[in-house]
Length: 145
Image 1: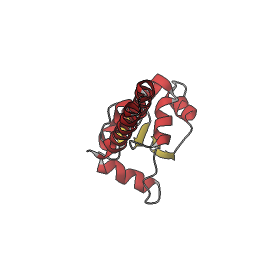
Image 2 (image 1 turned 60 degrees about the horizontal axis):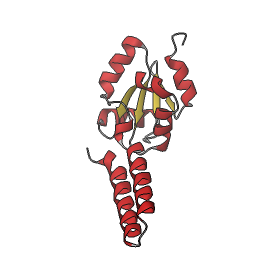
Image 3 (image 1 turned 45 degrees about the horizontal axis):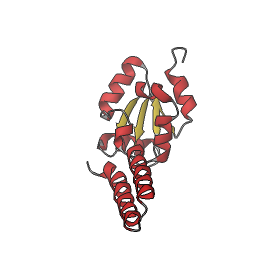
Image 4 (image 1 turned 120 degrees about the vertical axis):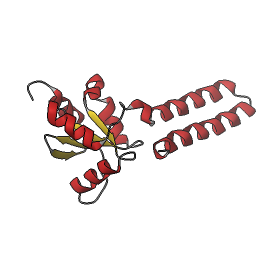
């Protein structure tokens, strides 16, 4: 459960140490700027940026019912973050499965990627696609797809 929060916590801790050093050296404006940058980086790399994750089995059932893609992801993955941010609001229409929290989802990723936990893996109509282009994923959400 705590694994997705390790990177954000490390970023906040490092930012705090740098900001404290700058504050002690007499640069309060730089300290605040550094701390804000590190907090922003922590927020972007935290699970808070992603929609609420559901379990792999539930995501499969829902996807079979409405045809929306399932994204198997992991916190701290820059490619997962790109897939979350670039499609904009339409990314909320996807079903997100955090493989750090769902061992069945992690097993599905390994089965699709020759034993590797390569994310993001997007499952569309039962077919896995490893690290697809975010625009392609957005096209899969359109009614004509």
